[in-house]
Figure (cartoon, rainbow, N blue to C red):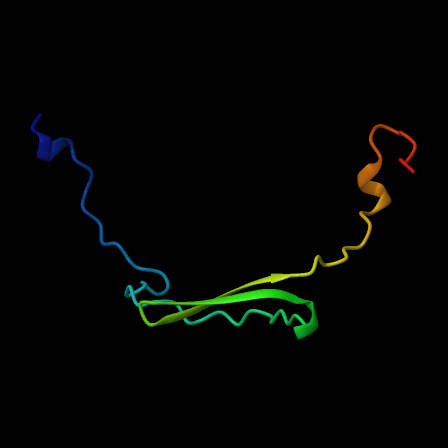
Amino acid sequence: MSFAEQSAPITTAHVIGEIPDGSPSPELKLPGFVVPAKDILSSKTYFRDGQKITMQQIKPIALPAPPVVAALRHNEEPAV
């Protein structure tokens, strides 16, 4: 039996949906993060390849306490 006789019959493939053309994705709209000027400790701006990058050192941000549920393991009492 030859290879041609052993092969499965040729079928036609169909593309479902869109095929990406390789173009860049549209810019994502990210929520802004605004730091008040009084909380900026230092700032340095760099220019490279036509881009402007600003690095800022800011005051520490107060974070909420972790949820009590995260502190419990195997019916332990929460740490105080």
